[in-house]
Amino acid sequence: MVTLFTTPKPFRGHSGIIQRNALASWTLLHPAVEVILFGDDEGASEVARDLGIRHIPEAPRHPSGFKYLNAFFARAQEVARHSTLCYANCDIIFLPDLLEAVATVSSHAPRFLMMGRRWDVDITEPLPLAQPDWAAQLRTKALRDAKQRCGQCIFYFVS
Image (cartoon, rainbow, N blue to C red; front, side):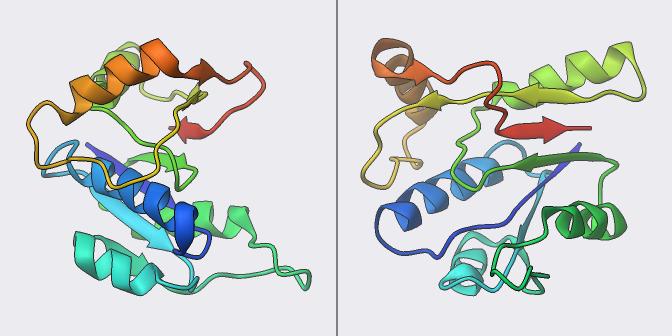
């Protein structure tokens, strides 16, 4: 199984909607998936509580205010329940086939690095996650309307 981890921007406005959508989609991947939200950004503790995900507020920062991502990778390796870790930007929605891809890759090699780029989809409101076909609807919308980012634009890592 997989532990997904991330750090958000403040949960307000459009960023709040898309980040909450993303985190909620992660919780629906499988009951055994662990989700860890790092950071003390506005709304993080409330969203973590609402979604039932693990929240670690400590967020080492550079004097400029930017977070040290390497600190989250190190901390996730220390505290994760699963040995397979996935870091993703906090606005990346994962569909159920993520776990199938991880299983396929990991079956070929015990050590691996899987990376992916995103499809930019205009989402302005909460996803209908209670509907059983929400993922199929989103996939259809992405294939019809979205633009896939370039190969150098990596938005998640699984190892």
